[in-house]
Amino acid sequence: MVFHSSTVVLLVAAFLALAQSQEVLDLNPLQWSIVNKNSSIKLNSTLPAYPVELLRANGVIKDTQYRYGELESRWVALDTWTFSTSFDVPHAVFSKTQILLVLDGIDTFASVTLNGHELGKLDNYHREFTFPVKNLLNLGSNTINLVIYPAIPEVLKRKTEYPYHIPTVTQLGNVDAYNFARKPAYDFGWDWGMGLAASGIYGGIKLIAFDSAVLKNWHMYQTFSGDTFTLHVEAQLLVPPGGDTGVLYFTLPELGSSLRVKVELNASDLNTYIKQDIQVKAKDVDLWWPVGLGNQTLYNMTVTYVPWQQVLGALDSATFSVGSASDHPAAKSLEAARLNPAGAGAKDLTSSVTKRIGFRVVELVRKPLPEAVEMLLGNGGWHSANKIAAGTRPCFNGSACQAQCGQWGWVNGTKWEFISKPVKGDPEDSFYTGANSQPELCADTQTLVN
Image 1 (cartoon, rainbow, N blue to C red):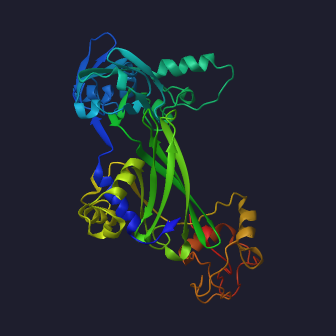
Image 2: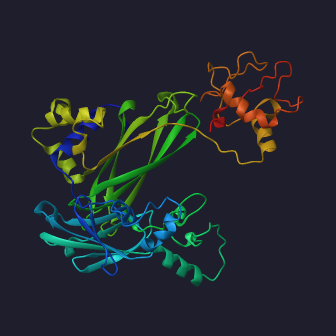
Image 3: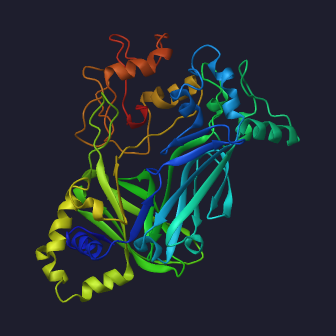
């Protein structure tokens, strides 16, 4: 169901004013001890941190980018480094029913221990790891250790054990087994890049504590059919041990549009993903264009999760009702945050995520150049599935073909020259008018934008 009034948005604002849904304890600003395997080197730093950079900054190793610096510092990548720190857990965090340790940006092979209990082993530079730690934490002092192992011996071991030969390309002095680790391949050296294969932490470590489900993030892709964009949204929620019930609100404030969905969250799924399609009429939006071809119009889209008990509490409140929504102080202040998500009040919407999205239709034509040109331009133009809209702007003024471009825009002369240049040599080409060599374009050109 789609709502075009502000009532739903005001209700969301009032719901979120009732309670903070989560507590976050960031461990990055703490002082971390960083020690190598035989304890001969001891460093201290906040996070993010890499031993190779800390050693360079302290004059222990030379600039790794100068001459043979990457080889002279290779011993750093071959050592094992332990990151450790102590931290206090306040009652506001400890009292929550679910507490998660979130590790984001650990590079790459590591094990993590909390208060002497090993939580697990990590082996992926690109992903985030989450561990429930409620039963392992102390109210007060706690200790966390991350042991990060060298990547080079691990990938070489995996390569040796693999039953098939996997071809790779490498440079002198670098490592050719980069495809055996979920770690950036360039980190093992290629072309002009250094082969540091460094170990460290490039992201963040934190505790997230909550009683009801929390919206962690959402992602989206879009499709287009007829005159309508469909936004395919997937919301990621963190779920407490007892599960939860609530409402997801999807709002596009500039378009005055909101959609709400009641969701049941299972306790067995710590990370739960909810998919929802949202339809937007093309006539209601300005399209996003690459620079030089039009405006880069973006719209704020907010996804908000409200626990069901907050929904009921707001609706039953003696001081708040749907009829008095616009007069309620909480609604007024948070309506301002809705209209300006980056402004005052938005930071308090602890289970709400806002992103900016653009509307665009692009088609990738994966054919050999002669065939693609014939498909796009032959026989009087490319006939796409989208009908040409009346009153849209001509593709080329003065060309023999005076048809209009598709409703999504046009390709200007410079861009068209670039696209058509490889096939311009033959004067008999049917898509040239001959006398003035103007491209004869009689159809939708939306997909020529790259």
